[in-house]
Length: 91
Image (cartoon, rainbow, N blue to C red; front, side, top):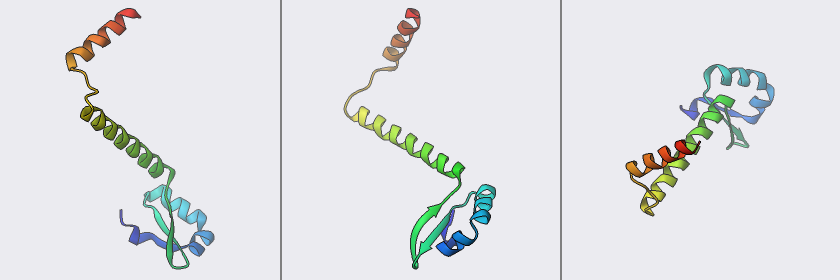
């Protein structure tokens, strides 16, 4: 995804919002919107936004898992399965 292919001034977005929305839905590539010649915002589809949020959530879980491992907050596979079996028996 190259943002350089879809750099548009804010005036373009104002004049072509429906066209931009259709393009985002069809192609998914975000737009870099400029204001006074400087990058001001990224406009992206809902699907791309949701995918980005899911990816960030997964990366946060991985980072937390690595932190747990470093701090010794882990159990062996055997212990984990033993706890799962006991939990299932209680139900």
